[in-house]
Image (cartoon, rainbow, N blue to C red; front, side, top):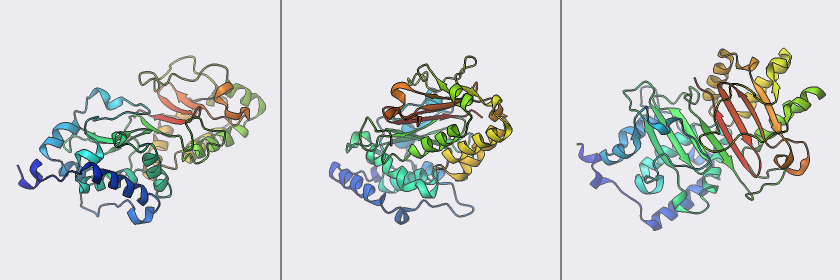
Length: 329
């Protein structure tokens, strides 16, 4: 084995250094231009591949999982792909910096500061809540995937390239409570509430009968990991996109694009192309939920979903925001 990668050469952080690192990382999120995500020059390995090649034998044995690992299609609002291997305790500073670059690269430059802030906020000041990362497969596999998990965060990407190719056909998650666990109707400070506002713009542009149909009187989907991205084949609630005019269908697709804008532009473009290629815009059901799910009873819908028999986008705004997105490819 290359002596430079031997476990004895790894530099781990003490608890005191970990706390300093957490504080420094939080400080950097206020100045994103100082830590902008970088893209390798032509001919260089992608950022995930660079991180993969930096792994020691021990690290490789712990975080490189087979392509058919049962958790490849798993998602939850709070989970760790490798619970015993956390960013601030299992990796060197250089490796941590590579992971930071990967994470930032998965988001639109205008949203990176907010995404970093969300991860730091949802540590809740505890080292035990630091994220965990991993790989499915190796560079020899065409479907080589990087995954980043933690509290209110699951991101995935193709690991061979820094070009966004969509979310790999596996579920992602985003969420936050900015001020309090039980958010108010304005979701003050929540970096994902912009999606709710964009969705409500679409709803307000519907006619009266369509708005009546989009509001359903039953509970939203079960949020347990086994159920939350389950695809319903029948009895889909809400307004069928087949009943929308062509202009309204176009507005729905544009609404989805605007709601995805926090992510890497290439991933958004690839996702929308998949939606169009699958003719999903003609096969979607859109629903929103009242009662306790309408915070403030103001008919600005905090909880909604867009789904089809092979697609789920569930946005739960009560008591705070959880967002699940799964588009198989």
